[in-house]
Image 1 (tube, rainbow, N blue to C red):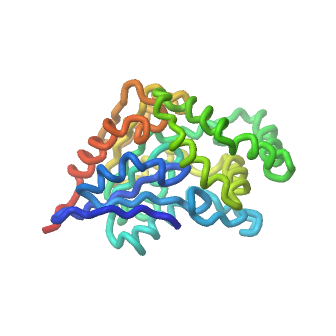
Image 2: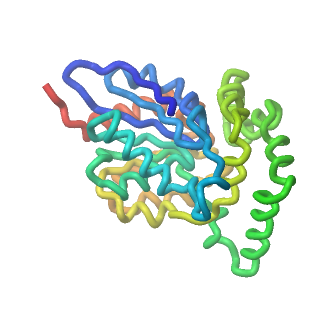
Length: 281
């Protein structure tokens, strides 16, 4: 597992776990700033980034790449490496992982900030009943025929990654060659195709609206208001759940605010942590 460990300021030991779907390099604009006053880790969950990528076909019949697996990994990392409670700062699908971890073991998560958390609009329960067999058939086609590997090959190119990022970033000038390489490089490692296909065929598991009522720690929901994938109009409903102390809209920002607008996100993280951190002398 790859993780990034930065400095710890004297008299403050607030730990932060940064998480997104792709890899920890997507937090490269946040780690140096936040590490000036906190101990910061950016984790590549199993199957993604530079972590191991076990072949899902060799792991038994039950799905392995699930939010339960990743949530357990996140909590185990805190127990074994951080050895303390931590704040979970998560983006997109990573937000589901953070909430799942917080629900699975409330003693570990001190607070969670979910940034443009995935609405999971492709979840099987959000599809009309008559469309579900078609979805299952398409997933079977991707997972069990050469069509899936061909699809992955068309996606795993610099041109495709750049086009996808330009869709979800409002300020496309932030979609640099450095960013494209950071996203693409680990996706070309052995085993990445099998994990990718397994995950895009995963339409079960928890929804944010199911996890939020169970969370015991404070939550802040942050949303770039120009996100074309996760519309802020739907995301605002998450601000009504009891654990959520604030819903913050970021004007003119897309799906990945931590990378597109770190000057807006970093102060929000620092403020959230400062409100809930336990200072140690």
